[in-house]
Image (cartoon, rainbow, N blue to C red):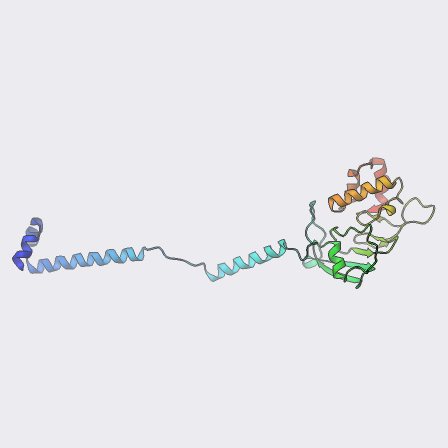
Length: 238
């Protein structure tokens, strides 16, 4: 077998190793070792799936939950104002409102910030059957400390204040400031210089823009100039 193997080897290899058995064995060991090292290298360099550490995944989940809670509303009627501007908040992202009048469970209600009048009515057990809801903007965004009066003629609460009503005979305006967000057209007509047409314009602006956020927005109502605004400003609140 030795001569046959020698004839099959290249000439340079025959001259280099002198066809000694020990030399052939050493060459075979070197080749096998090189093959093993190459295989180990390619095996260690193969692509592997790496998972994120538990602490990183936990932090990502905690950051996602508050974002989902703030984007979702508690009911179809709740949410931020469509026209911009955030409503006043209580502590912890809640507001406290007083719901009184013709509701099933009048009293203090704690609601998520951004809730609307419809949410407050639902929290108070709903409106009693047969109650006149004319002039009550159920889509208006509530503010912290506001009072919502339902179905009591002549009583209109101001957000964050107490209720007031129209004046008696011979007075030029209401006894207490009227709320632009809750007053009916008839109550707005008790203001000086406000007739049926202008009262309707005030209500239309309120409906279109989701309520008044400041008294200065009266300047944007059609038919109210600087002089009339100066007369109305001390008699109304948002």
